[in-house]
Length: 220
Image 1 (cartoon, helix red, strand yellow):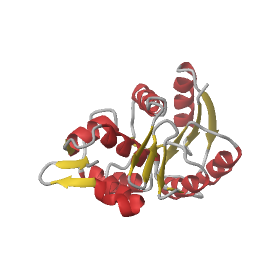
Image 2 (cartoon, rainbow, N blue to C red):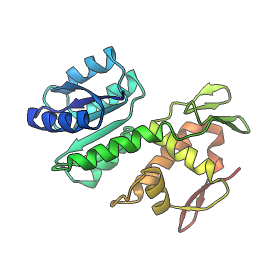
Image 3 (cartoon, rainbow, N blue to C red):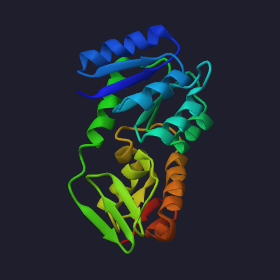
């Protein structure tokens, strides 16, 4: 049974999300602030963390940074703030999804399912390109024998591009396929993730080619 951690200082929101999560067959744990969330993540294994931005003691963005240092777990950020900067900053931190309050609990459950299904969907195969080794099933990437520190979203992006290698992919296509639903926002989200991905691929960054006026492709 997938286990979810709900982190929000508003008890009512935790209660609503908990009820829907249980109805959808998930095991649920809760935390009321960022510091408590760090303790919970350190002591338990979660399949998804739902993390509010505005919290006492330790805000969601700071908690996200610390959680990523502890474990590689998918994070859905909740926020009442709709500014594009906040969303892009969250994605730069490795957030897998960003949901603006007020939100539909049913939509949140759908997004959780997308993230959980994503982790199961890649076939058993290790792909190699020069000194770059990509384990699709294990969701790990090796650069010259050293494990690359990629976020879950960067791995999703790389796997999709490799699956469609040598094919030019528009930013809109990447948003739809990698984020798994229609994303209404600035397509610079893709550019931000590509930049981080290239950095983490080191000497093999040139496999990701910019297609002028369109998007990107993975060139094998």
